[in-house]
Image (cartoon, rainbow, N blue to C red; front, side, top):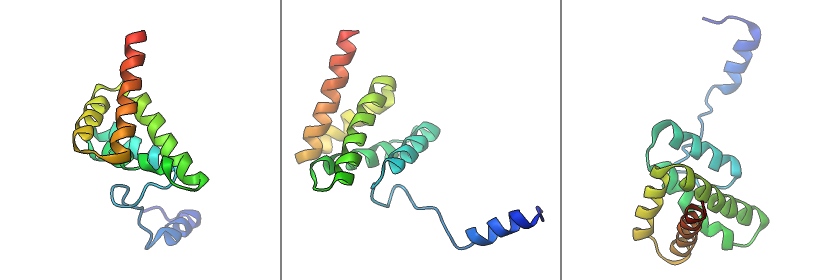
Amino acid sequence: SWTADSVQQTLARMEGHRPPNLLEEPVDSPEDLDRLWAMFLATGEAAPVRKIISALPLVEKKGAANILVGGAAKWSLTSNAEQHKRVHEICSEALQDSEGTTKHLLEEVLADVNQNESEE
């Protein structure tokens, strides 16, 4: 119903372009983490947090971008688990199913949260 040329041009550029499925695509940027946190905050569902957890092992891969995304995932999980009981619950549940690097990093996240809570 909007007929302005600028709106029609924008719609034409968008045609055929679908946003990525954040839960299926790999997490490869801090912006992806932000989008996943927005999805979690809007829905309260565990899937976006679990997807962020899946990015933790990137911190041990080669390449600055991987280290940045993995480190940002770890920091944001720690910060949000301190602020939101639901995130803490999801991380604790995920820990039970995790192994290797993911398990080790999730243990660190939860240990940091528990230490910060005991210092308050």
